[in-house]
Structure formats: structure tokens, C-alpha cells
Length: 253
Figure 1 (cartoon, rainbow, N blue to C red):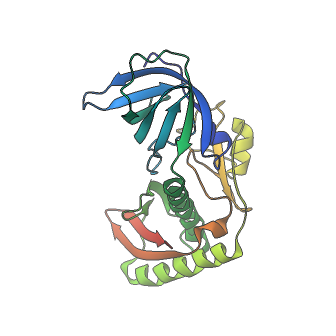
Figure 2: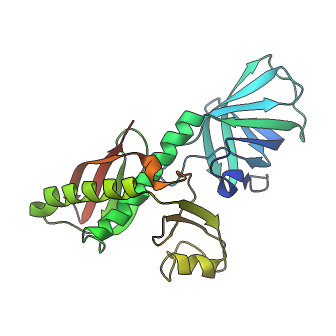
Figure 3: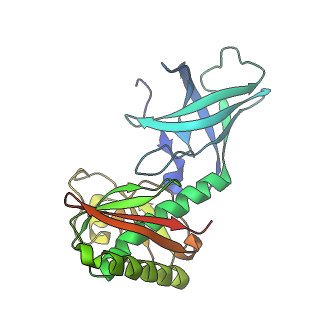
């Protein structure tokens, strides 16, 4: 990618669903889709187990819109994939101003599912499963889960499943402010319990998520403003295989 890294506006404010940006370029992907590149974006790209935002990009002073159907990030550059609506644009000049609008209902659902996955990590510690290390998270509506390194004895799976659900809903009913901020490495390390994962380079400025007054963890996704916004949570399945434990969950619609 020749473009500079895209400024991620949602890292600064997760709850703002509109922003202004400058158009930099567009290209047609191998699959025929058009991708727009901007200097900044309020759209969350797919990643970190979270689906991408969708919505619209409006070009100032024109009679066409761009419907954003998928968003990806490559080498720090965010690619907005979609189709033009209205009149077919001729050459769009670099530097043109655009207005971005994110689909609110999709963003809210994605944020609630992602926050619920992090809440599950806290609950694992509270029910005596803190020795299991969180790994892959899948926070999509079609069967969200978090995978942990380590096993739970078969005889305990159903008991732990029920304990997790009770703990999660107690924390949700109690509520607590959710914080997310980009911080200096040392400060982020302190908030995350004294160390950060190896994949975060020393000297970098990671973004840290905190649910209430609990320890933080690195996360680049979007989240609820309060734990109570998850509404309720059900642990649907818990299974252990090949040294890994998968915990599946759903949230209230």
C-alpha cells in the first residue's frame, strides 16, 4: 500500500457514528469490488474477532453516495469496500471531502457482542478458571465464542457453564463504566496487571480496554459504554478438545 496509515477515529471515540474525512484514492479489487481509501475513518474494519461496520460515504457537493458493505485493514490502511449509488462518478479528485455514516444498529450489536466476550474473560477468573489463557475470540452474531488454552475436566463442564452464566449476569446487572484509551506502553502495562502480551512491541502505544474497575487488556475494537448495556448473557455451550476450551455465548436481542 502506497497510502499512509489511516487515522482511526473510533479509537478516540467509540460512540461517534459520523465523521469527516479526505478522499485519497480508489481501486478495483480482483473480485470486482471497489475500495475507497481515506485519510481517516470512523468505520471499524473486520478484525480482532469483530465484524466490520457498514454504512455510507457521502461526497460533498455530488449526487452520488458510496454504500460501504465491508471494511478491511491492510498494513495500517483501511479499505472501504462497496458500490456507488446514484449517478456514476467520473474521476474523483484526491483531496475531496467526504462524510462518513456508520450503521448504528449493526455497530451497537457488534460492540455488545465484543464486550460480552471480554466480560467472559473476567468471569472465567471469578469461577476458578483464571489459569486458562484467553486466545481466539469470535464476536460475530452467528455463534460467538472465546477459546482458551487449557482444559476443564468433562465432569465439571456443566457446573462451570452455569457458574459462568450466573457470574456474567450479576456483573451485567451491577454495571460499570467501560473505558478504552490509547496509552504509553508502561502505563498500559500497569493497567493490564504489570505486563503486556509479546505481540505488542515495547515502546508502542497500545489501546487498552477496561470493564469497570477490573484489570485492562489490549483491544482495538468497539465496545459498550457501560457493562449493563450488554443487557443479559447466556452461556450456550462449553467444550474441551485437544488442550483447548471453547465457551460459546449469546446476548439478549
